[in-house]
Amino acid sequence: MFVEFDTAQELLKRYGSPLYVYSESILRQRCRDLLEGFQGRIKPSFSAKANTNLSLLKIIREEGLGADAMSPGEIFVLQNAGFAPEEIFYIGNNVSCEEMSYCIERGILVSVDSLSQLEQFGRISPGGKVAVRFNPGMGAGHCEKVITAGHKTKFGVQSEFYPEVKKIIEKYDLKLVGINQHIGSLFLEAEPYVNAANSLLCLISENFPGLEFIDFGGGFGVPYKPGEKRLDLSELSERLLETIDLFLEKYDNKDVHFKCEPGRYISAECGLLLGTVHAVKKNYGKNYVGTDIGFNVMMRHVLYDSYHEIEVLSDKKAVNGINEATIVGNICESGDILASDRDIGPVSEGHIIAVKNAGAYGYSMASNYNCRLRPAEVLLAGDGSVRLIRKADTMESLMNNF
Ligand SMILES: *Cc1c(COP(=O)(O)O)cnc(C)c1O
Image (cartoon, rainbow, N blue to C red; front, side, top):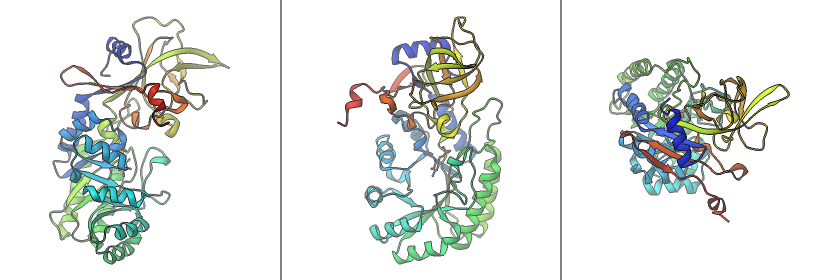
């Protein structure tokens, strides 16, 4: 863990509890892992939905990554972080014509993921450049809600519909410049990703000559559970590049380039969520540790049953020493659980708890539910300084839209 008790205590005193804390050096390292791992042959683009903090996006851009956006809001933030239109890829899903136009006006490439949306794109932008997201019929992921390809999801164009795609492309004189896919989130083995890449390349080599790029999607996992093995990037890279080389032997455009869309892999591990224990209690035989980290601050466990390692930081002996406990927040729902039945050791009121790997889908999913204020975010910069990179909400900000 990159923050010890003394620092954590100081940060919470200064910026309030709870608090998201990010490590610049870890963030940069993850970007470099990907750039080096793929030897410059597969360009990583950060999937902004994982974390849209402006300062983090600037760092990611400095490292040379592109970015993927899923909404005009994300485009707006990415452009404010300095990403040029050609560095942003808009991966739309059931978007309005206004949203497509928002991208087209700014010179940002759009990926559509249904025949229905491709038709609409053609009507708005005849002769324009477009990308199509296919669903290879196989998915992967840590829970059903994040499996984004296969037979049971809303995403992508079914591979068998490629003749219809070609018809619409011709009808509107569109230029199909890229094909993308995303099979799901959080795989820790190379196998499913390589297989899906391979099936996409088969579809392309037989049906779609002349593409400028092919994008294999994101989903690269990080080890959330203790003892879990890291994704072996060098194995993944080796196998992907082998697959690509075979494909290129037959493909007409030897200059086609390759991309991927990691989100979590880049930002999860650089983020730590600090909070404070406000109550320790027993309810009908079960121990509860009550904190200020409600699911308005971190909702991954509530949404996906996700596991985050949690540590207690303290300098004093616990008064009510308890071991196995369920760690909960301060939201008025019994589902407001951060971690179930954990052996977290002695803990009592006033102790600090640290939620690890909180840099992806943490703050970006935070809300004002229960009129709770979203916390501040700080960066532990490479030079050792601490920078406030997003202020906490205020009572006044709750009144912003009235
Ligand atoms: C969410 C998403 C990603 C990123 O997923 P991670 O698991 O964070 O890598 C990439 N591409 C698309 C289309 C997505 O929806």
